[in-house]
Image 1 (cartoon, one colour):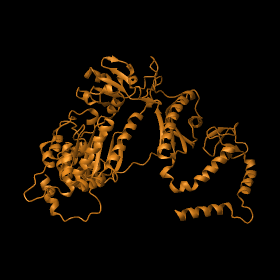
Image 2 (tube, one colour; image 1 turned 90 degrees about the vertical axis):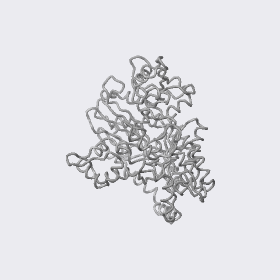
Image 3 (spheres, one colour; image 1 turned 135 degrees about the horizontal axis):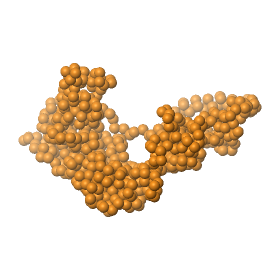
Image 4 (cartoon, one colour; image 1 turned 90 degrees about the horizontal axis):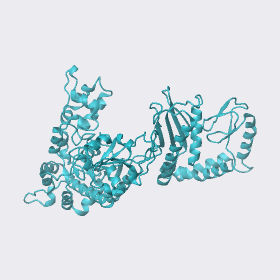
Length: 623
């Protein structure tokens, strides 16, 4: 209880603290895909509907044709698969469900159904297909709304808040510093009142025991939200939660005396998150749920306890009350085979398992390692991790994820022949997919250039062939422009399939990747130092052909480009991928002499290398 927490904390000496209390919020959008669909199609409000994946056999809508039909996000009406008993896109009725509205969940619809099954469970159900483009799902609609939500939360939480995007619809926020500032500015009583008015649940024994008594997955099960858990309804605060927020102050105490520093900061954090959630709903119409706790692990756990449109806090003194009753496999990270092993123990060694997180925590690392040893790799490290997890310990910081190292598009064609995803056997079919991939990759590279001020420098094509387990890949310099991307990628594909017949390639996997990013914060000051030199060099290359050395005068049936490694036919001296022009070996001496003349400094002046070294030394001294 809060009284026990106060006594324990008040008896401890005041810490000489230079770092703030840790306080992390996980904010999770409620039924996000459905909420995004309602923004562009308000007719879906208050109606049961689901969002389904595209069907790869849909084709262009004509009988007997396969492939993925391009269907943009707008107009949304074009993506309606079924409306009640009216089926508009027959191929979509066998699609898997990726999101279920709360109205549909109330009718028994779950994510584990196919669209056809869901329509039987809910006759008035509306079925929406995700947008598609470039032969796959187009997540642009959902990503853009997710970015808007993140921006609002960052603005409301203010300076000092750190954010980490966990997925398209959830984010961690380290709110310790802004919560301390808010607490100092407005006081604990106002913060507690605001948190209570937001119906902030206080997690503890009741939630832990309730989860432990749930027959199957409970609210915290890994598939509970996706499957449509029956407990996901808005509930008022419990009596215990109301008492935690509205504390009875003993005689002779000031009102603020009933709030130890940790609890006071938790109240400020709850008020801050409630404000952020309210602004998201006001501006975008989205509701979201949140968990506020001392670390990311517990914040994630709390967020799942009360959904939708609710928030939950976990006081440090209540961590054991929440975790101890939970079955071991209910904790994230301890499911699957590991969870089964921990629960069952090792009867062959007469070692009991651990039915609850509390039992595992109390047993300690050595006892857990004994159960794992022989059946699990790295038993000591795994045991230590499991005990920390059962104790609610997590030191991982909230930090923005690093930018992606690559932008790629790929497709698997390993299905049966004559189907929607049968192997690609000729260059025409390969080029059609390369064009789709190039459209996708090019648009994302433009986004990277505008948003993060960075550019990719390398193009990589990877394939897998029928009957050959190991993939093949080849790379070259990435040239700007979608058409150049297609040309270069096809050149790489032809090289990778040089030993195959052009009519039976048997490509079962095709991937197009742009990587080797430079720019933005990744280049920094060093990039700025050489930027002008690169611009001058690029101007020179645009005026004269790129020349490279071939290995001999008569390269035989083919020659490998030293620049991009592409294998080229002997009859041409220009690389099909990077358009470099090869110079026969007999011309090397003349070319080398020409280079030396250009790099030799005039009499009385510094050499080129000395000038370059001087410039770099000057740069690093300034840096």
